[in-house]
Image (cartoon, rainbow, N blue to C red):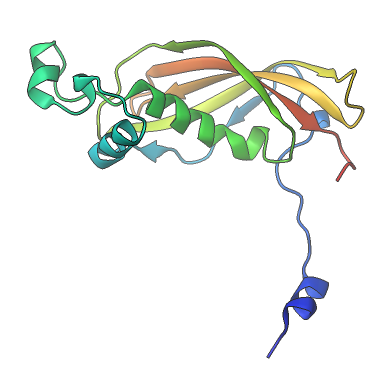
Length: 164
């Protein structure tokens, strides 16, 4: 039987995510496979966030208001697209600094599959944190038809190469 100390001694620490030096202005990151949003995802998210807009859980209400069925909560759309970007943009470490200019462009319905793409808008060295740079990306989310449904700018401190 192997003990925890033995496992720790044999473990190899792998670097996760990209670093500041990988973030050149204009670089595009096509994020992983995508995510189909189910009706269950929408109901659970809407309930857990206490979002009481009937468009997200009342089909007759949504239809009476011009939609083909219930609408996916826009904050679930945002969080899903944002989450898809983490592996490429911020998993390497560094505090999240904020989101700006978030725009919900098209309605998302249960059953739609979202994908995401981010483009480096700006990158500069941090004046206050010597082991980090400050990077801003323009992130876009698309449905299965390639229609852009959400876009925003997000900014993070991003760890530099060689820094733990």
